[in-house]
Length: 206
Image (tube, rainbow, N blue to C red; front, side, top):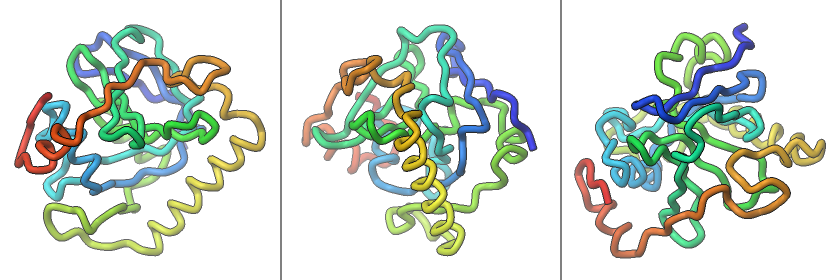
C-alpha cells in the first residue's frame, strides 16, 4: 500500500502542497447539486464533473493537507449562508476541497482536480472509487452501490469522531489556528446567483 505523500497542486502550479495518504480514508463520487453548482461557479464544469455530473472526492482529515507554496491563492466560497466552505485556487479556479463551517468537525473532501496525475497512487492508497453519494441528483443514471456506500460513510464518520476525541481536529490549514474562523473570508453567493448556477447547463463562472 502506498503511504507516501500525494502531490497537491492547482492547474497553473502557483498553489502547491501535499496530502498525507495515511490520513485519507475513503474515495467517493458525489452527484449533489451543490457540487455541480460549485464546478459551474468555477467555470470548470467540463473537467471537474464526470458524464453523470459527479465529482470525485477524497475524504481526509484536514491535518493531512499541507500547503507548501502559494497559500495566498487559497480562496473560499459558500453557496449559501449555511453551506459548506468550498475552497479553490483563485489563480486558475482549481477546486481544492470542501470543509464544514465548524472547525471541530475535522473533515475535508478533497476534489480530484487538485491531485493531478495521482490516479494510480490513489488507487494504491485507497482502492477504487466504490462510494456513490446523492445519486438522485445525477444528470444520468448511476449504478447504486448501497453496501459500499454505507461502509464508506461509516468509515468517514468513525475517523472524524476519532480525530475529534484525540484532539487531531486542532490542526487544520483551512482555519485560523486556535479559531473557528476560516483561513480566508468566504464569499457567500446570493440566492439569485445560486439559482443561476442551478439553471446553467455548463460553465458559468461568476
